[in-house]
Length: 410
Image (cartoon, rainbow, N blue to C red; front, top):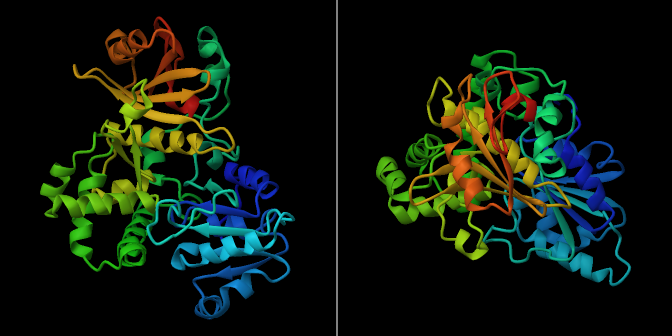
């Protein structure tokens, strides 16, 4: 078992246990969900029902209602393997009437139960959902946190420089961080790039041959491997399903279906386009990222990370930050008809913030063109912008725009 690092999701889950009968801990396979749910403090005094065990599956298939309603507190591990249990949980909660036992069931799942077609109910009003993503950099440093994004909303833009420079997190080579990724086993147990690459290759093989089969019953492993490579090779780019279909040799309708499965199983991250109108956002094409940089690099058959992978590293951290409970944030990208772009737009009640990512060691006026256009487009709502780069100095580069070393934030 991997070493226990404090996870920010554990904090969110503990709060949820006091508020709902069911707490669902969901996220990609191997992110540490089972360990989180079965070890103290969340797993203390709980019977574990793992759906990896044939006898447990058989008992639940024969009498799910009886098994789930027994006295005690339970962990149901990998519930997506038996979607019918969601309705059994609903019946068990409803049978309690007005005297609900909060935190009785913790369930884990490697698929987004809210999006799975096989799941007939969302457990609305009965369950709280928390997402465990791969380790953030701050979690790997022992801080149980995501990046310092909240400071951009709680601090006046004039003070961003001083606040962001005041941090003792160490400088790291971003290419090394990308290669390590965030899954606990390669990060904490493996000590060579070769071993991590082998682990990622095995992860991909298992995902293609087992996880996707469980979700859709597919056996098209060679074709799916090409599709995976085509998608993973486009991190940081706007989704173009026709191009992905042409490269993978799959029909566009099939590509569309599998992209959804990649997203449901927490491998693919889609960052939607930003507009002031929430309904118009649905018409904007999303940008694509992989939920773990090391697995994404391996899936794309690339040996060396590119600047897009630094952007992917930022996207992973922002995705984890946006999933925090109870305050949900928004993460978007911004692109105009005249090709002005901002890599990420962060949205909170306090306003919006633009974030650009540059793999270079320096930042100049020209690197702020997209952010300047963004701030001009939303003069009242936008607080300011930051350019994350591979340098060492925190400094102002334009009005309300700061250049900040990426490692000062992540």
